[in-house]
Image (cartoon, rainbow, N blue to C red; front, side, top):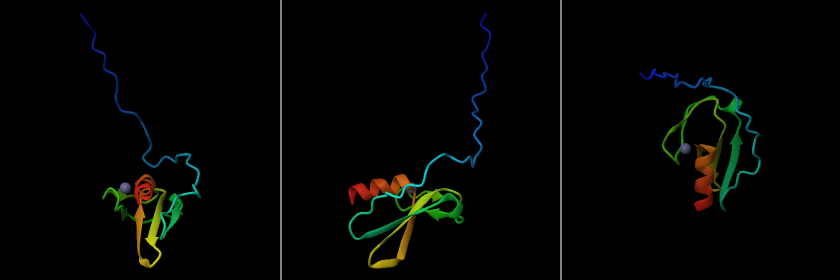
Length: 89
Ligand SMILES: [Zn+2]
């Protein structure tokens, strides 16, 4: 007889727990691009990341980037998605 081990698998993580990620002033921008970090507190809208096509939820630190000649076309990116893009650009 083996007693069933029922371990609750749920890990309790508050959805909007503040992660101790320090702001990163050194987010790389490929030549011809401008990029700025958006702090979680300033992320008040939902955006769609062009890197992964997923939503960037309000309260998520991310970056906003645009081409030098296209400031109107600024896009919001997840920081890791931007990093990937910036590396390959
Ligand atoms: Zn993304």
